Image (tube, rainbow, N blue to C red):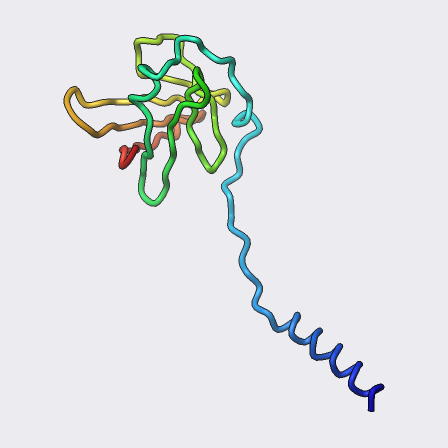
Amino acid sequence: MRALILPLAAALALGACVAAPVMPVPVVPAQPACATVPLPENPRFGPALTDKFHGTYVSGGESVRVTRLGGHRLVIYRGGVPRDLATDNIEGWLFTDACGARYNFMLPPDGPGAWLKITDPGAATTDWHRTGY
């Protein structure tokens, strides 16, 4: 009897594994290798500059997050990957990342709200608006 129970238990366990539903693996958009290239810290990137751009921006069903890392790095999270942003003009609101994408921020003169235009290499452009901080 014992010889019959062990193979039966093994078959039931194997059947449970086969019949178990397979959970889908979340798809993460592919990021180019340049997306993870860290740019040098800019000592002029302090809270007064970076925090005015901080927040979550949405476009359709997608979102990106802009924040300050450490004391002197402005980053945008696209597809879960932080991309460092740099600018040649600290007074301007146009930034670039290591992939050559351009990030043009637009802030209202009085009150909340902000917009972001992302232009990827190849001229694909998307418009985003800030929904939260």
